[in-house]
Amino acid sequence: MVYGPTDVWYDARFEELKSEIQSSCSGLDISGFEGREGSFEVSVNEELVFSKLKTYGFPYSKDIIEAVKKAQMGEKVSEVTNSQSPCNIL
Image 1 (cartoon, rainbow, N blue to C red):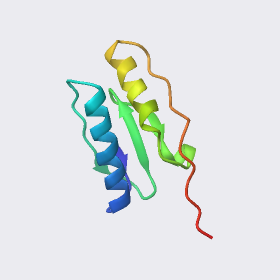
Image 2 (image 1 turned 180 degrees about the horizontal axis):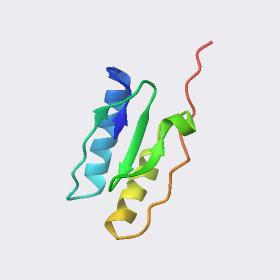
Image 3 (image 1 turned 30 degrees about the horizontal axis):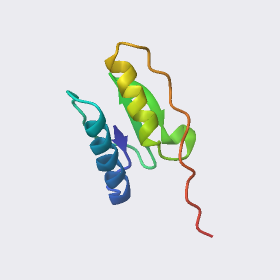
Image 4 (image 1 turned 90 degrees about the vertical axis):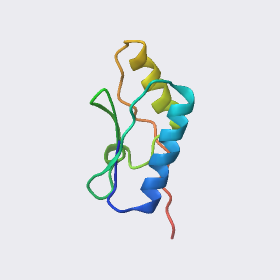
């Protein structure tokens, strides 16, 4: 997973998603690193399945877990386009 540089909020999102995936799926190697600003991307088997840069929101854990489970069963994983609405403070 890739998340925005030195952003505590993104790091917390990564750790939360990682924990939820590990709780639902076994035998995985999950890693994350800082990417370009504003990014939060998830790849499964080196294939991009979610990009905050495209959806403007963070992924729902259930959608990412579903993609991981499909990959574990040898199925083709589709891009996840469903995302949480970004928070707007006016």
